[in-house]
Amino acid sequence: MLGRVVKLLGSDHIMVKCADGKVRVGRIRGKLKRRIWVRENDVVLIAPWEFQDDRCDVLWRYTIPQADLLRQKGYLPQDV
Image 1 (cartoon, rainbow, N blue to C red):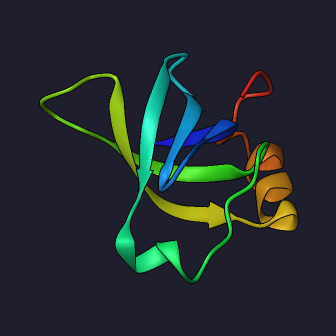
Image 2: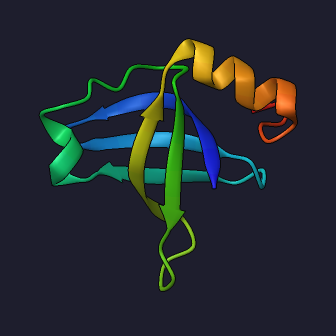
């Protein structure tokens, strides 16, 4: 699922507004923590947790050209 970073919460946690309209607290996976810098308004790929609906894992951060391409192809809603 795609989402946009709303707020950085510190450590490895961020607040993400998801494509389904929910706001979730995301956790940056350890594999990406030191490789990718996540900033506010970045488009990210997330995996919602099955046992807590308000939590998710951040799997990937898209660059600006990649996010524009996702928006043009219709994968990313305009309000996210």
